[in-house]
Image 1 (tube, rainbow, N blue to C red):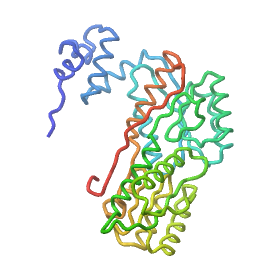
Image 2 (cartoon, one colour; image 1 turned 135 degrees about the vertical axis):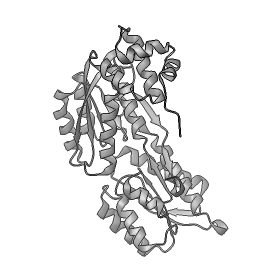
Image 3 (tube, one colour; image 1 turned 30 degrees about the vertical axis):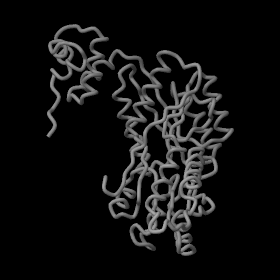
Image 4 (tube, rainbow, N blue to C red; image 1 turned 120 degrees about the horizontal axis):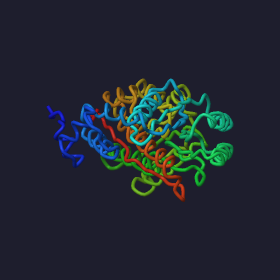
Length: 347
């Protein structure tokens, strides 16, 4: 069992004396805010149990910052986890008192996204969103920028050149990882080929298009014996993905792999469970959910490529605070996170 961090560990990490840490923890004497903040950061880094108490004391004097976030599909486990991580990162903020204002989009129609972004503008100081790539959404970002509200793209890089930062995975690389895993799993004796299917959520998800491009480019380069079927659009729905996967399995006895570049993976998992033995078709999906975890354990999935939500949300909070306190950087930026990779034996 790992040893629980002590005051001495916090002092060593912060570069102060144990007596200073004690004064910060128990408010025995006045301690400079800079020192208190250094102790808090050290306590948080090493997992000291009283870090939250120091953070609460710091936040009393911090400026208030309303951070709007627009997510998708409130009923999905992934987005519920996303919301929880945003709230957790906001509570741990050290430079401002962040108040998250979280909304869930009810559709993927670009005009609906734009209206939702416009409606939340008057209630926030910064906005982050998972949104489709479309001129109407870009126009909304421009309006927000004009009102002094920076916009951050999450998971899918919309409004390139206009949004402040993109925070998420390198989606081209994600597609290549998926292709590598499927090709490796299905090389087999004689390196025979077969067919491989790809699902994307829609034509306006820039991240899905990049994943598809990376997927296809890897197979062209390293596994040309496979035939990639025409890409299928599943609108990120379980039922449509289930029906399309069942049809693929019925028509193609030589189907060797499936990659779900977006949502709807639950339908593909269900169809594969009903119509093939575990491991007969290699399948890679994105995001670890109760359904994808169970399918991994059953060896019905080959790999799950997951977004590190805690890291993403901490990065978002840092960038929002930086923009609020020090002004916006001169040029938009990208912040790529390393994906978490799960295989059957790692869950």
